[in-house]
Image (cartoon, rainbow, N blue to C red; front, top):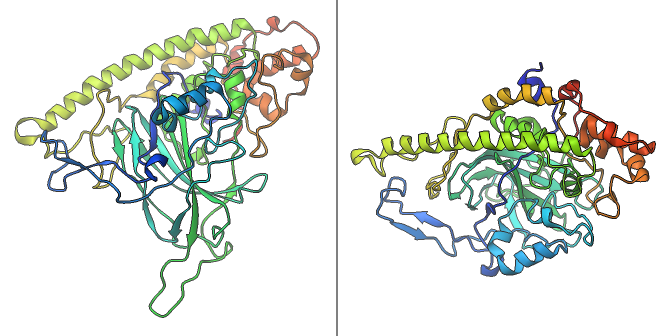
Length: 464
């Protein structure tokens, strides 16, 4: 029996099931000129939770632009953009992609910025090396998660470069977050005027789901001493580390692996925390087969869905327990004369730290502090007994959506498609899927492909 660490270590990080809710966006909108309009606490209050409702809406203080998401020509997504724009702005990467018409609409990848080939031309933010930047975030999500900030360069290249800047806990039931990040003081001269650099904010929640938004940025030199002109360092002089971007084909995963959850598609996979990693690992065994359900035999997909229901029920039970415990902990802080003076309860597993400007108010379904590591240990024997292997995320070799299979008329049940699927996409399907495609390529019956207990030990990794 593999340990939970051995199972996690080799996994391509995946996300899980859950209701499709709109959950996170920048707290500014195009219609209001990207003006930050978060509700802010009265600075005379300890934390804005004393019951007096002395909160003020901070209007026109700052402008935070970003690339408004594309609708990718999907009818459902276009309708949401028109009829429920706020939900459209704050939805996850796979928002409405699981309702794509596979008979008429071609799959398109949404990462890294929820943009198609003709991105929204947002205003550019002018930053300086060493500058601290506040990101106003609006959440409609009670779950914990991890955010990361990455600077993308060379966006006109086949594979852009990425500089991971920072990561921090976010979400956790807080309606509004205002995290900070600091541009490295020795950031090199690669993001000048016209360079096309992007600041990507990526959030992966423990639902788990993927959220991302990008802002065009130019990064100049900091102010120099009086009478002196400061300069940016060259890339060789800078300590900032760039790496080739990890590029994900989210449309492939939605079509062939799971239509209702998303895999980890960030740029800092080695830094993902143990609780989020365990939650993701739990669901890597329980994909629903995607929109087309064409990569594995029906019996295998049915087995995954059976365990999927068990995992979901177990998570809901733990979340209900956490909600009760968290509310009791908050009540203890607020007891007697303590209300509004002793702060907001934060779980030990995810400690969401906000700056002093934030409205620290959690939602009614405050589910932080769930032990997903322990839950994974409980389910490992069930996964192995069922002979199920974890599945991964498809990695592509350029920003463009690859011409792979994702429609009813052009799917993986086709003999030629099964034989010609690129290796990096086949790897995402896991060993059962790869054996299935191998039999189809030979014209053999794929229903004879059965799970194998050794498949649960599978540790082939893509994208980590």
